Image 1 (spheres, rainbow, N blue to C red):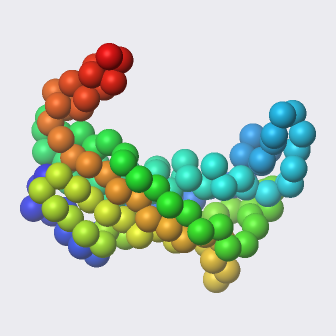
Image 2 (cartoon, rainbow, N blue to C red):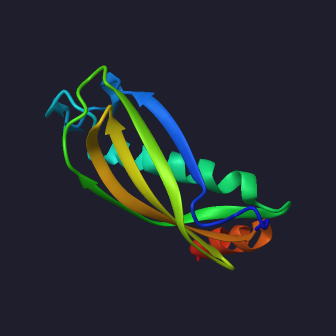
Length: 131
């Protein structure tokens, strides 16, 4: 990683809750809100934005953990802001704390861990998973 990867770096994304983000189980719409699994996707996106500008040529990140504490609903049509803040860096690891909000209201909090390796090593990890 480049020297610019530091604790305290942030990245923010926004999204509007759309119908495809609602929780649907076995064809039944459960609630007209953003599903927890879609929030996981948004957490991953925000964390990736915090990582990518700091990768060296030939490096890539691969997610190894995401956690979410869903605190309040984001209803259909709501605009949600997701901010990832780097809280730890190591030779092959970046940890982000993540907060999703609508205005001043916290929708969810959590964290995400990415491992950083040469692209060839990630290719090997994926190839070996097929065995």
